[in-house]
Length: 136
Image (cartoon, rainbow, N blue to C red; front, side, top):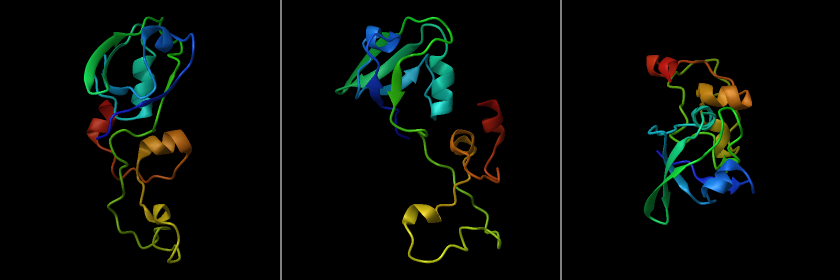
């Protein structure tokens, strides 16, 4: 699992005022390891989130002072921080199997990640959806 990395901090924002910097790796937010940008958004929407970050090999703790539901003012590098969930089915009608040979590699990935469906409208069969996903 990769950690979310801060790629931009808006000047004057709560993230900026608290000392978050581009390049900071987020270890936890309020003690929780975010696995995707959906969870990230929910965690940073809370008032005064506590960030454990890795900066240049050092672990640093920062409290971002802000009211609930106000913008943090920081962007991260990816939508998924753990790994994209793929489909394990071998359906005859799968459009992936119907693609011609020789196209770019990413087109042949059998994405079945509901998080990407929420974010980008990707098609998903939800065959990888688990009880843990319901709780997350």
